[in-house]
Image (tube, rainbow, N blue to C red; front, side, top):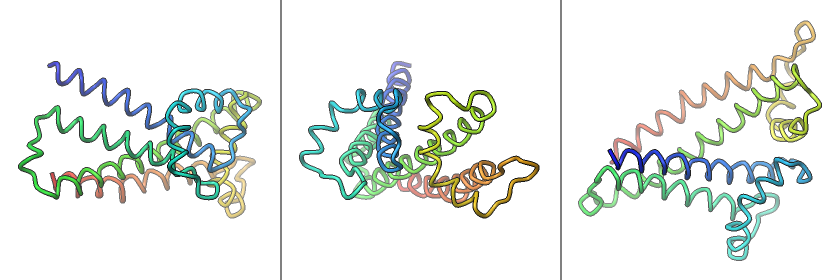
Length: 191
């Protein structure tokens, strides 16, 4: 019972920290304005690990490799900790356990990345109906623009309604079903 509580806490805390790191990575990658309160909060939550790591892992153009590396490490530690709490026999598992752990880490980051963009599109669509001038609107617009802008050129408005968010949601769910879940199953079978 205590192991389940610890696993829950690890999943929650490390999962949220991975989410914050990935949000910072995607905010920088998509050019989200840093003067926004959401961006400032992400910077405040992650600067304590981002600044030291940036000294060893520089940016590659607009891609913050240090933040991506930190998200990878947090997710890897989470995967390892969950298996350790379940009394997984690491010493007897052989070398395939490390391939499985690295694969599950990458799949976890991919799944979380897809969810970030799906929820970003959903929030942007809801806020466009309720309050399009909220301070979060520029953040969501910049975050989802790389996905929605190409679709808006192709998909015409239907009765004044933009269907591109619906196409992104369907495409994201298909990615989760057809790519992420089978990959996750492959790596779970290696354990």
